[in-house]
Image (cartoon, rainbow, N blue to C red; front, top):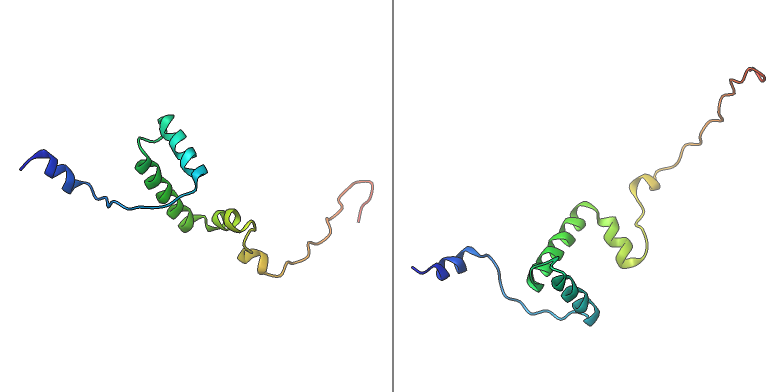
Length: 95
C-alpha cells in the first residue's frame, strides 16, 4: 500500500462548496498571506470550530453579534430585592 493512500484514509475531511461574501474572502486570504492560517481550508475549519465552541459556551456573544442585542439573562428576569440603606457608623452621627 502506498503512503498516499494511507494519508488519504488518515484525513477525515470532506470537500464542500460554499459561497461567502467578497469582503470575508479578502480578509481570509489576508490571514493566509500573513501565515496566521496555513490555507483557506484551515482558516474555515478553525473558524467553524470556534463558532461551535462559542455557540455551546458563550451563546450571548453570538446573539449580540448577529442581532445587535444582548439576550435577557435568567438573573435579570428575577425580581430585584431593594438594598437596605447603609448603616451609619460615623462617630459624629451615632445611631
